[in-house]
Length: 295
Image (cartoon, rainbow, N blue to C red; front, top):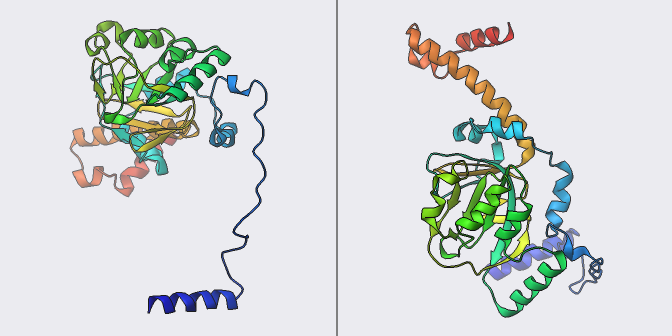
C-alpha cells in the first residue's frame, strides 16, 4: 500500500511538471579558491559565517557594558526576543555573586593527535602566536573581552590555571566562560581575582593538553551557539549570549522596566489600589504612568 502511494505521488509530480530533482545526480562544482599567501597568519581564524555577519555587527562601548551590569537577567530575557533561548547553564563561578559582562572572544579546542599537533605548531610559528590559546588571549585580549572557550563540556579538558587567568586579567578582560574545566581552583578564588569571574564546568589538577583549532570564530557552549563579539552576561545561574545589535534595545527596555517598577512599588506602598490593578498595571494606571513620563 505504501509503495503504491509513493508511485502515485511521484506520477502526480511528474505529470504536473513539479519535481525536486532540478539538477543531475553528478553535478559540476567550481573548484575551491586557493588560499591567498599569508592568509593563514590572520589573527582570527576565517569564518564564512562571520564574513556575512560582521558588517552588520556594531561596536559596543565600555559605557554600554557598564550600564548592562545592573540589568537583571530576567529583563534581558524579556528584551532579546528570539535569542532568549541562547542561555547556557551548569557553570560554577569562581567569584560567587559577581556578574560577568563583556564581548565574546571565542576559541575552540580539540583533543590532540600527532598530525593535529604538527599543524597547530606550524600555524603558531607562521602567525607568531602562542599555540596555547589561553596564552594568546593573555597577549591579545582587549579590555571588556570575555574569553569563551569550547572545551568539551563536563567530559572535556582544562583551559588554564591561575597563571593563565592572571595573564588574561592583566589585559583588561572581564572574565572567562569555559565549557570545560580549569586548574588551580583555590588560586582562582583568591581576592586578587575580584571582578574577574571564571564560569566553568569542573576543576581538576590535570595540565592543559587539548589544542586550540579556531580563534574568534563561532563556537558551541553547552547547547547554544556563541559568535565572536556577542554580548556576554553571566552570573551564578547561567550565561546569556546575544548579538551586539540588540544591546541598545536591552538598555532601552531596562530603563522602561525600572520606571514602571518604581511606579508600581510606590503604588503598593501607598495601599490605595488592589494588587491585581498594580501588577500588571490596569489601563488607567498605565495612562497615569505615561502621563508622568511625558511631562
